[in-house]
Amino acid sequence: MAHNKRWAVLYTCLTTRAIHIEVIEELSTSSFINATRRFIALRGPVRLFRSDRGTNFVGATDCMKIDAINVEDATAKKFMDSNRTVWLFNSPHSSHMGGVWERLIGVVRRILESMFADIRGDITHEVLTTFMAEVSSIVNSRPLVAVSADPECPTVLSPAMLLTQKPAEEGQYLSEISVKDMYKAQWRRVQCLSDMFWKRWRTEFLQTLQQRKRWPTKQRDLRVGDIVLMIEDDSQRNNWPMGVITELFPSQDGHIRKVMVKVSRPGDSELRSYVRPVNKLVTLIECEDQC
Image (cartoon, one colour):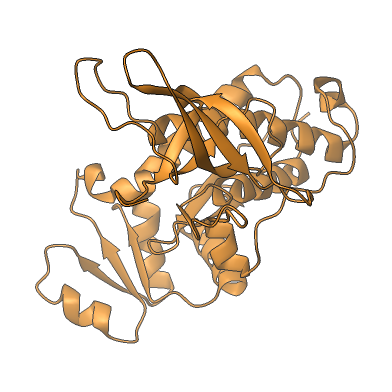
């Protein structure tokens, strides 16, 4: 059986922080142009591209008749303000200048590499492309900021909401998926891989939101009215439970280590309250002092 390598091109919006992944068959200018054309056909025209100085990127700008400018050029601002499509390259050997996209690429790539290293058997092109679409959906469901502090409507703004202009809802699944489904029908394998990615991505993403400070450092205790994200091990894919702190439970030393959180879940007619330790909560918006 012949085995062919595949690569993925990750596009991210510098405004909404949404991502889009395209699968290509080779690291060539031609493949990258096709991927970019598919991206533009789905997402619309792009005014400005930014990237490092990959050779396939540089070659693509010539074939696609896109103006490519170096970051050190004095005319950069003039090109960016025009209505033409501009490709802005970072200076050589400066990957740190692309921190916005490098951070997303790094987390996604680490998870995918570890997953594929443990997978036995072949993955078809159809399974891979569908799985990459699911990965984009999972990453785009991550919370950016709370829309409202109202406990009756604790909605989280996500890149997916900015793209679809629709409120986030829990994902709809065809049936329960387990590891045993990995080697059954192709669609079951995709869903199994997606669930594996979701668990890894959710863990690694939440770690970037939680601040870890040394115990001697004085920290702000949670307060009533704070908007928090709940860390739940059994949460379904693309579900980020968010709530408002309604009650505090001080310890003997006066610090807050347990709180009551009021949560509104999709499909529930009533609000539910849960007692959670502070290490299972991620603060999204801090309440004002007068709350």
